[in-house]
Structures are given as structure tokens and as C-alpha cells.
Amino acid sequence: MVLPPGGREGGRHNRHRGADQWLYVVSGVGSVTINGRSHGVRAGSVVLIERGDAHEVHNTGRRALKTFNVYVPPAYDHSGNERPAGRS
Image (cartoon, rainbow, N blue to C red; front, side, top):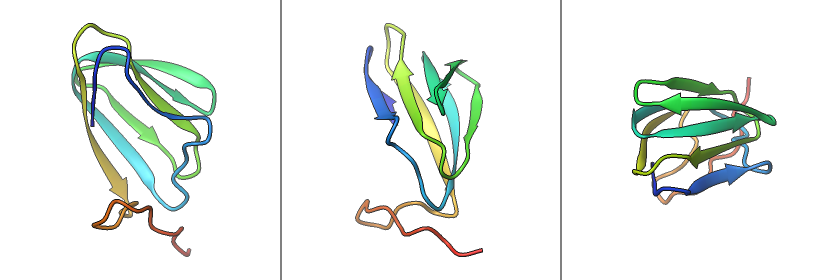
């Protein structure tokens, strides 16, 4: 994911029903808000957003915030549509 300066992704209604999201910050600085609690991030930071957590990523820097995201299990199909929640 690449966010321009001041860019945001997500919000209080952004949740992944059936997958955890691992977010690794490749470059830039920003904040990740999970369930209303904000955490500063920078290059090298790793954040776990657990399934069902409301979350938002915000670029607070002057350059692009670049992240690499892994969803376990996969959260989206090949068309970019969210997959239904998995079964335990």
C-alpha cells in the first residue's frame, strides 16, 4: 500500500472479518489506529491488526508511506473483493 503525504486508508468501520493483517512499513512515517488507539510507525515497524479490529493507516510524513501487507488467511480474492469470514 502506498499513501501520499496526508493520505489515509481505513477508518472506524474498516474491519477484516476473517483475516489478521500484518503491516510492515517499508518507508515513510505515519500512524496506525487500532480500535481507537493510535501507534506511531516508521520504516521497519511491524503491526498486527487482528481480525475484526477497526483500523486506519495515516501518512503523517512529507513523503509517501509505503507498506507491505500480509493477510492470514487471505482477505481478498483475485478481483479485490473481501472474502467471507472463515470458519473455526
